[in-house]
Length: 334
Image (cartoon, rainbow, N blue to C red; front, side):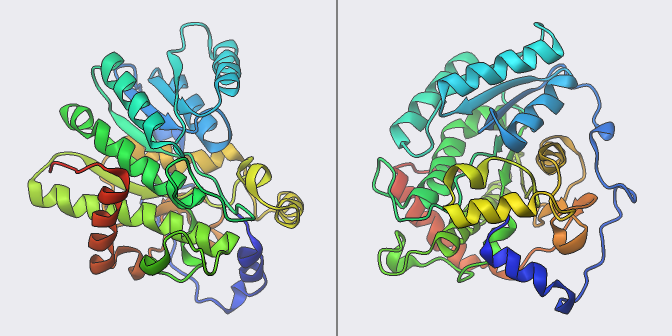
């Protein structure tokens, strides 16, 4: 999403060396037109009641899939289900389970309900996030709010559901952000809660970098264990969603509002394309970052974009994995 750092990059984008656009899916990039019937598929998505998560849910339902949303707000979830059924018909297989990623007990309860009710999971789409929280705050479990929500919550959820995903030969999709480039470009292990230097953008950057590192380290561990589960990382580019407007400060919200009228911001529907692609498309690369491939990779045709090497620094990924297991109290059996 757009932040003050990304605004700065907008003004200096001409100084950056252009990258070659991915043409795997043709000049228009990946679109839902490539997606065949999904009638026998079941998808879980966090944060599916608004923004790109809602649009991803809509796309999958339109193809006949069953979608279960894992959302924090009961009322907004009920409203989303009603809206989707009104648009797609009462036969649309959409439901929700209440889950708060900022509360690990809630994550465990939701995962238990998923395992009780769903015999298979074809893809878990880790879409939900909070961003640019203006002042330091904490999750129920004492973690910095963005790190706890965006990374630890999804780390635990994916671990709890992994066996069911594996049984389905399914996938895990991490919905990241270009914001991973904005901060210190590593993990601040000596102060994970940023008590000494909290910054709404740099701290957010670490949370999304952590989410990416989790996915790339999981890829390595699955390969070593010869496990048949796909793990992919994508980002929505710059999309018109409520992410900034619900958690950013006033200046950030005003800035994003102004930028949202520019061609540098795309619709939430187009922002959903990368996560739907990663949940369904065959032949994708593991060590990659998928998203828009146009100007600054904020907008444009969806394909394989630029992945900075620090995002898969092996020593950092391994240390983060061990820390994440300790902080969530969950050990992955791989």
